[in-house]
Length: 453
Ligand SMILES: C[S@@+](CC[C@H](N)C(=O)[O-])C[C@H]1O[C@@H](n2cnc3c(N)ncnc32)[C@H](O)[C@@H]1O
Image (cartoon, helix red, strand yellow):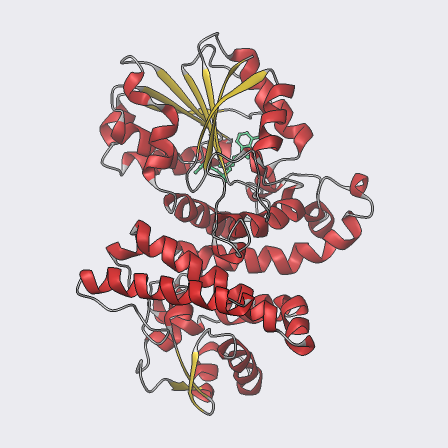
């Protein structure tokens, strides 16, 4: 079999398998023209695996047969895509189109008059996006949403968004993440080019772009940055909720902990991970630690939740604490850090891990949940090795969690001088802070279980 046929066969067999799963559920696989409508099938493991194979193989075959002009667009077109999305997202174009006839779409002059952009500019941006399968050009200059553009709806009417722009991303995490990545990316990423030539000049490209010595998280808490902080909080909470509950609950093995055992969620934000743990292990005590600027949001989140009782009885508490200071909770049963280590450089991450090591007792466990950086070739360090079927890239390229972490790794770099880490990176970091890596529990986030060395 030729190499193209091999990739095409992968697409064909996975497409048939995907259609069979939908058939069994009495449904059809959504087309690109269908607006996104969440369904239990989205989280079906077979749907996820087959979709991943199709996307990985289709992307690989596309790159294999690309001619020089296609290669140029693939190599240098990312900036255009981010810029175009940043503009149409701020202009609420998906939301405007949702209020138009879904089939007939809306003429660009009408979209422009609602969002205030020039018709010609908007037409060209939307045509570019439609040529990348975001939005559909129904007839010349007439556009409609499609499945991909509808992922980024803000779930509010255009008049509601205009009346209260600060809340525009509330309950719309994917739109919030896109907005945040586009804003940060366009503002900060250009400075990465200079920063990599002299990384001593500033902590990260972010600091050059914003002309500040504060790290991103402290900067978010500063006056004047409320809008960005709210967007980031929504994006974080929504992004984190995307990770399955079992990813967190399996990581701490709470059923084997005695009643009243203490779990400290270090850098826990409002306590999204703690909420998952509390629901599964209501016999444990929880302390969520984060910066001052998270305290009110945590209080509001818990007091209005179904776990309000646990909050009022102080079974779940918030403690103001910077993870660079001495850890005040000594000898806890579990110290958890979800989606924190990757925000920091190796030297800062070592300090964070050491602070917890200094407070830990001999039986304390330190659980880190972070995205896994995956090599594109086979990695003997990975528990589930090999990952993707040949001839796909071992990490599924753009399609799998390795693709997402490869993208966010660059974002971590320019925003914080942070890093998505491989298993080997994380093991070494732990060792340098006095921890021994005992166990790996793979999931959407990799769970690293450390014990004192
Ligand atoms: C990506 S969020 C993760 C939040 C939470 N662990 C989760 O999984 O939902 C990173 C968190 O680190 C917190 N953070 C940043 N700097 C901190 C510091 N010096 N001490 C404690 N928390 C900090 C931020 O406020 C934010 O809540």
